[in-house]
Amino acid sequence: SSGINAEWSLRPGETAEQERLEKERAEQQRLQAERAEKERLEKERAEQQRLEAQRAEQLRLEAERAEQQRLEAQRTEQLRLEAERAEQLRLEAERAEQQRLEAQRA
Image (cartoon, rainbow, N blue to C red):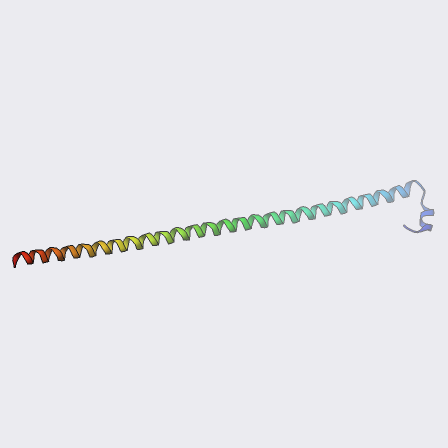
């Protein structure tokens, strides 16, 4: 009820007070809905951040595992090369010993 005519028809105290209370209630509901929406969005954001942090941690662990595997593969290759070299030295020593024995016989 707005406009001059409507205001004249109001019983000065009651209806104006009632209208004021209704407006107040509506405003409070609007603010409450606003707060609820804000909270919902904040929760959503927090959940998103939690999931992102979880994913980042997962990726970090995977990268750590991959690095560990790379280092293990490197170490294995190093050991293989060392074993190969040791075998070569053993064969060379064997050949040298054989040549020494042959030289002695001669």
